[in-house]
Length: 88
Image (cartoon, rainbow, N blue to C red; front, side, top):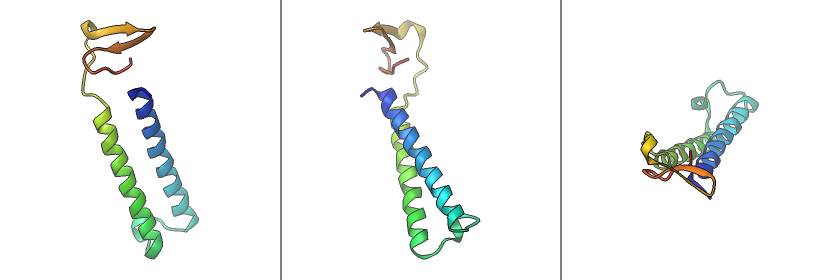
């Protein structure tokens, strides 16, 4: 798996979690997530923590490299940055 695919999977997972939380909020008739009580609050808090953790992992995977032109190379037809090893 390339880093690019891992980032795509994490982005999908974050989006999916947010969509499910929003669907549950609407189904359970809460205007905001903070209104929830009991087990519903536990579920929302758990999902918020999961999303925060996934975003922290994503930040570590996404390089802060600007991919300078002189650092570009091609391997097996795939262009990548030699500085951070990210597929371009």
